Length: 130
Image (cartoon, rainbow, N blue to C red):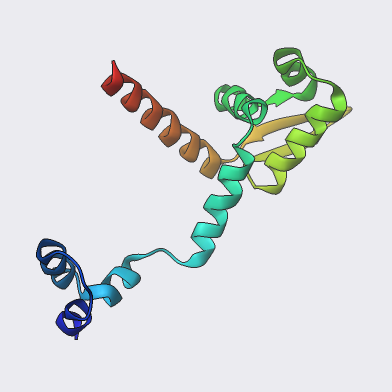
């Protein structure tokens, strides 16, 4: 069936042979992650689509921090900081823990792995360009 699926497509022979070896179009589809994974990725990339939020995530990679320290580094108004923290929380990238009058934010384990991979990819692309 994979060969028939591939034969129905107008594609280069090299691609057709490769496609057949992985089970055709259906084989490719089976290797895709579930749609929920793409939804989560989209939400995370949207959350990371602002330099302020990336800076917040980078800060939290080292240690949990209270809002006052984050504000001192990113130098934005309380309302804007609250907005950015909310986006990161809704995306599941950070968590806030109320400790007395302070909220201590930390990056979630999955978001930390995500950020480490992104930084590593950036570093390798930068090194390749140099």
